Length: 334
Image 1: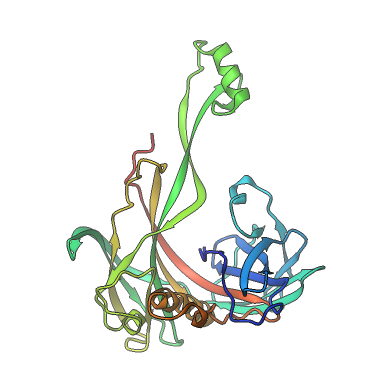
Image 2 (image 1 turned 90 degrees about the horizontal axis):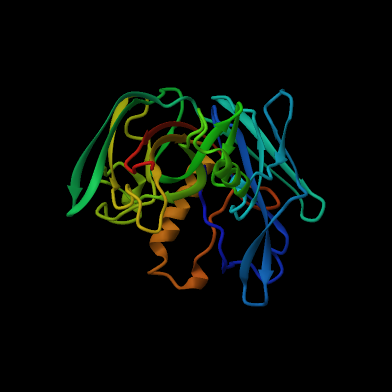
């Protein structure tokens, strides 16, 4: 998932030029169902401040070359209720080494298009983790060995997230499962508790709330070395294959363990470790954000601006990736 933050920010554009611009921030991943977040920009007052609204009237189509266009429908599930954008989804999963075209058409904000290519599969042949310290900070060292394809330029992204989980209490009565945490379920359980076969059980459900975990690297071949010193924390590690194209490579990155276990005001969750091969436009867009973050303290606000994307007649990014993911549980799922 792209995980970019929508917020009010200073606009580099003259007043009025970003009114009702369609904004797409979408990363499509091989083997994962399509998810296209869509919003529109709204200029607030004359100060160049931009806000974002959901778009619920769009027609969203993703097309493979020569294949049947895929229509993504507005997903009204409560899972996406807290998202700052409307989310259009399809069960269709993109394929490796395939180019896709996006068209988003809205009767108010117009039509935007973009294209991206899903890279080949990330071929991992070694993976291990260990707990250690970096600058006195407890971290998880992640060592990944992979084979780089020789017939293409590849750009890799390493990242870590904490995905919050929701704990549900369920029970079964007369062959039907009920949720104890709802008023209806609670009332029924009070009436039938103690009957044979009726007992509460716990279940955990992943939510759409994700916390980005800071990562570190000591690898001078990463593009992070262009942003700041390698002692700094990063949101992602960026590794192009220019020095190892077509060969095996091992990357070690370190994940801050501060949020591995839940804080007092936070529910339980799971840690996601990811290695991605990113399309050029996605890689460049995310790397712009890494530089933007590091520049906040050194540049005046009117010199900070959103990175250039590939959405024609709109704002944002439509990027492709292939991904390998590992899931770790450090919280007790009580």
